[in-house]
Length: 612
Image (cartoon, rainbow, N blue to C red; front, side, top):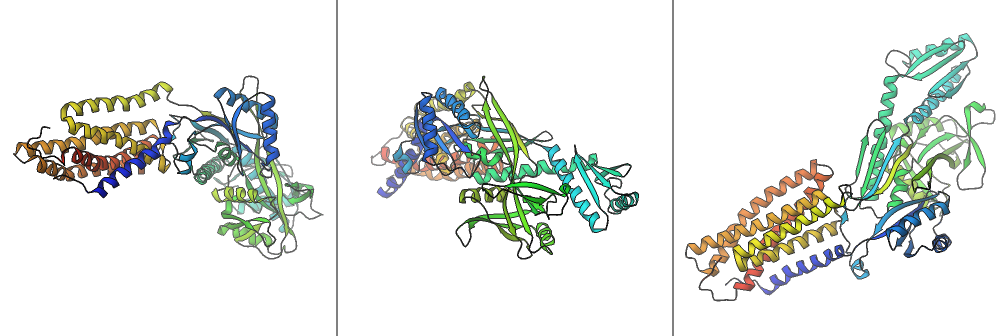
């Protein structure tokens, strides 16, 4: 007789019940929400901060469902899209542009399901939208600052050789001003001997009286621009990975632009805060009192009332040399960041601190900040500016190498954020937001409905065909098919996968493959009956003999799906993910679920005849 043991039925149906439970959050619609963060890490999101937001919304008669604050952001859940858009504008005006406000959505999953760890599937940009950033790398400013820093290093080298040179930097040009013709010839010789101005090298050289004008050559300028964009691209990808976003898109567009798309993002304001920052470090020695104003620069201390200090214009090294950064606390319980440098950075730090013990070493945090406003037509208006501040200016007590620590941070949150940015990779060049928006379905609502309808229509047609062709066996296959779809949805929800329109195509293909396995089984049972095998043995032989064929077909398809996932990008990966999950669930439902249902229908009966 074809019967499973009680524990086998219990195991199979337990899997199905759990699958249905974790698929359940997907039937609850999401609600419009705002995610708010503040560009300044020192701002505390406390009760007073929340009270100000609540008072402003109440004053403008905007209703909301809830306001919750975490360590880094505030989430406001609203009743409808109109309230969401109105709140964005009101709070932007209220903050004077300092709030980082992003449109998002909040799942309405019941609390008891949330306590079980159940959550809905993340929908991709083509289904439910997400965050879209278009960032432009400021290559002009990058090359200008780099040329100015190199000029400061050159004048320092000339000083070591016994002649004084001043310089001026403007519009990607540097003017080296010599005091005599003899000094000018020495400077020119030094540049030529070190291959700075020879054919195909870094600088083009123009002499005017006692001045030498340096510019980057076109070839070298192209090289450093490509380096800056590629470095920023890698850094942004690392930052997105730190945020844990599923299936993000981070790619170069044109000469100096980068597109970042984050599908299904919930903490979008924090994502924008991390991705949009140019945060980098500059290590500079504190200037001496008798240094010329052309050789030093004044910086204010960050988040303190210590005033300001003069640091040398020469940058010893930047955050590009940081290989690791971890936040911790010093012996007095104050936040700090432990820094590890690469070999070149360690050598530069050792060279700079050797012989300068007793002097101060300033650590400057460089940030690109943005104020966001809305005009009368609700278009986003942005004002970007660079803010540089000293976060540490400690006395050098020993020669530093590849490992040291940064102190002087105002809070553990600021330390953690700085460590994350440095660990994820410093941006080589500053960037600005050319375009930023929370976007809806990129393929249009009509195409989305067609994608979902394709599953429904395909399922109904298969359902009718299986009932007509295979009767009770077909009913068992249809129930297994429904279980298969539920399991695919639940697994996608559990693993945090992102469903895209190509992913829906993978689910449609899964429907056909799941039925295909049952058709093979039923065809084998039919052959057994035609060979005059008794019904119970025919059922048993049908499932056992079709097993190897089903496994071979599905394993080969699974291999192809895994290859697609490994070498594909974007939509191809979305298709491969749902197809892979569907293959695994199809094997389970076709072999175990269908078999258990057939056993319940026929296994306890004394069959003399069987029609299929």
